[in-house]
Amino acid sequence: MAWVGSALGDAIGELAFQGLGEAGLRAEIAQRDVLTYTDDTAMAIGLAESIIQVGRLDQQHLGDTFRANFKREPWRGYAAGPPTVFRLVERCGMSYSEAARSLFGGQGSFGNGAAMRIVPAGLFYYNAPDLYEKARVSASVTHAHPIGVDGAAVLAWAVAQAVKLDPQEPLPFEGFSQSLVDFARTPEIRDKMTLVRTLVAEDVPPPDVARQLGRSVAVHESLPFAIYSFLRHPQSFETCLFCAVLNGGDRDTLGAMACAISGAYLGVEAIPQAWREKLENRAYIEDLVLTLAEMRN
Ligand SMILES: [Mg+2]
Image (cartoon, rainbow, N blue to C red):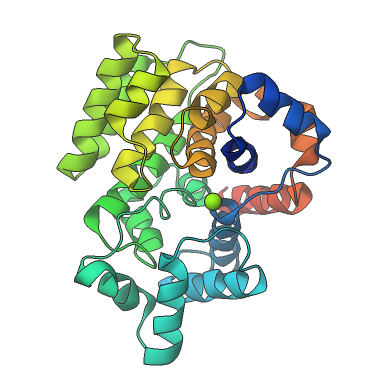
């Protein structure tokens, strides 16, 4: 249930924007009846729905699904990029990938929006030899820049590797973290993955790490801190989550990305049941997870 973990990271990360410490955030979670997710999980739902309906990734169908879900729930905290893509498709008759490529002066976006939603694809294609290409197809509906694609691909890879590991065994840090370096194809992501390895190995504390890795919504300035949070706290979903969301930056997405890997590695039992029960639309998300798993087998 990597994805339930990711959705909770998203919802709790959003609460963390109130600037609370860990105790305050725990109290806030406890007093909520529902933990409400944001665009990260809304788009992951769209990705899962599209894969389930088509049986594979199809850019037109995926884009149409994202667009329909955005129109139904535009209040989920979307950044400017996806709605701009949707407008260009509607008004100018572009394909989604053409519209996505036209953003930012023709370079496309390298925001973290393609990575934040990649979990269902990482789980569905966890054994696919062309996982990178799958991530590219998914990403380039809204994020055409090679760094935006690369971030999504590296997170898909991390989730796909984590779900194959036995959480009863210590995380094979060397092999796991090196595989992230090797899977990256842009210098921006690869260099950060190398730096993450060093920062975890040298036990550098989170505030210093956040300063070094970046706190923006660019994927090479947010995904690395999410991966650091997991690698520093591989055996505790809760500690990983609090590390990801309590050190500034794009908190909901940091939570979504870090907890995607943590949930994949540790499994659903590692996630506090009281949190799981409060997750908005949990039954629907769990249904999508099970359907994807059945289709994969
Ligand atoms: Mg969000």
